[in-house]
Length: 340
Image (cartoon, rainbow, N blue to C red; front, side, top):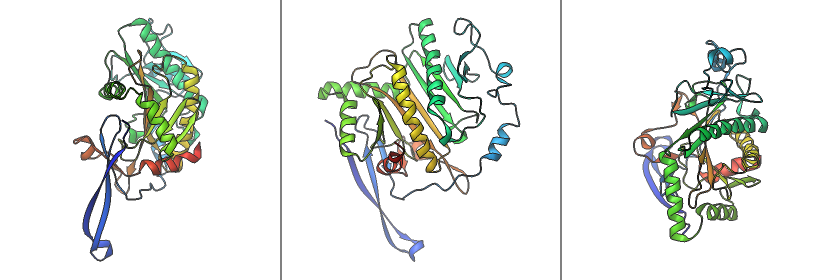
């Protein structure tokens, strides 16, 4: 059964900002309707201030030669074995896919998106994103042809340093593996369990119910829907992307990638208007259809907080596995929906 479960908790203290009058703060404890993971929604009306001038960070990033800038790619990026790419690299428009110098998996690559060293979040175009996704997926497909044992893949993005990005020059990170990551395994396991227990595909029910209520349904392009999840897993909110009726992204990728790129541009413009300058993204790829699971992606805006540039991951998430979210899903939806 599809349930959105939340409990309201109350914190009470004497507020020094109001002459130590008693103050009561309501906090929501929410349960993810698929995975049962817990998220806490804080009612603080959080807003990011305008970001710092990025020129200094960009200038600092150019003090050492950037391997993705046009005059450096040939000299400073590694090459694939000829079995993967005859010329050592995969190119598609301005995109160049090369092996990852610091691989996370045996099959791990980096896809330089554009010749521009820095692209502000709001200035990414559908074509830049579409070319990056297409080239990254081409790399994964080539690996699959060489190693039939590969079963899983993902296309990932660390945009700007707060996300863990080590280079400012925009790039995606495609990965292929024999085993799923823990989150991919959790999604597949829970989706199959929901199908067995209810006879329904969770993702079909989820999109239908959220679109009907409208509280967290951001928008849709083609068969790709964008939603703010009920129990986000990130302090500054989260967006979940559902590729409707698509059990394996290996089919009809061009159409789905076009719709995904359209919506992603809208999300980027909306997050930029909220003063975010960084994000993480992952598109999860299962080479074989999984019972009850549609293809999904996740987007998490990232930030640091003034005046000390405090990180947006604390002990509760890192050590306890639960997240305090300072932007409610309903607010995130209302912020981003106009950009669709």
